[in-house]
Length: 145
Image 1 (cartoon, one colour):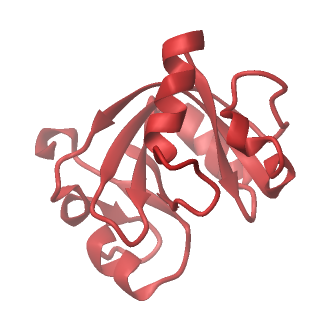
Image 2 (spheres, rainbow, N blue to C red):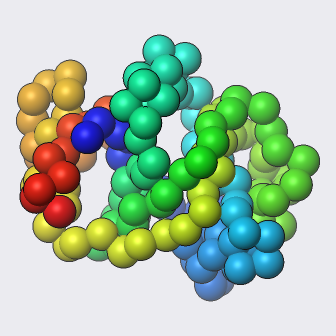
């Protein structure tokens, strides 16, 4: 399976944290939009994800140990008008790619050592340690997770 691994932080999130704030919106609406800040995910990568029929992305807590599978059913570059956490409202324009998440699942603590960054063929655990890149296109064998 090929998918994206995205770093997330708690810079803008409320005290409950990014994942919990997003989960509260899922509990209310059945889904939530998760925004990726900075450069947008390329149209080519989005097309590859859709071709792979990827139904999840990996979220990596930057500076922390939390790893989450975020199950998605949509991707857009347009800022959603509904279904985003309240704390996004002032910063929505900073997010250039949006993923519609329908559920979260905690990923195994060693998941990053089981993922390979496609461009470098490095383990995600190594690549993320030496790179400030917030987004990695990865491959993982479903039998390993």
